[in-house]
Amino acid sequence: MKAKITTAAGTFEFEGTEEWVEKQITAVLAMPTPATVAPPTEAKTKQASTKKPFAGGRSVTQPRMLATLLTSKEEVDSLRDYYTEKQPITHIETFAVLTLWLRNNKDMKDASVDEMWTLYKVLTIRPPKSLIQTFRDGKSKKSYFESAEENNGRYFITSFGETFVDHDLPIATKGGK
Image: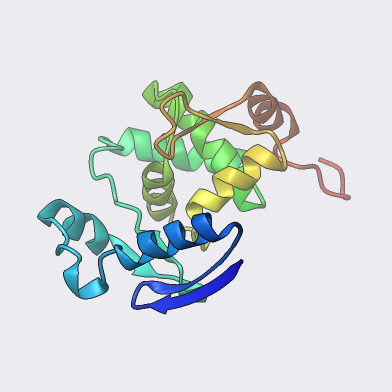
């Protein structure tokens, strides 16, 4: 048996035994309509307020500036010197440089988009369109990152990433460096 039902919750199609299809239709009809759904709680409202529209209708959580990440002029100078020395070209390379700097200078075993956003702003360089995607690409395409144990959007630099930053940056030019 086949059945198609349209409700305020959407359109549903079922195919199977008559008994199973009738059970599915009963379940759909019992679903709350949008007007009967409870309003969001205050916590959900606050969480949703950090999301902004992104191309394609998706939403992304906006990164936060971490005012206490760099606590002195010496740290800022150290970060700038390290970034200038390594001369990363791509965002993935920049994330690797910044994550390694955080580990070596701030004893941070992993980093999130908030740390990357903050460091990009301090260095006054344009951040990538999707910060989290840069971590994901660095993980899947280059193996420079791995998800932290309690992921929560945090990544640590792998031995591949560390070796790349330590030994392959800056990338030699044709003129010979």
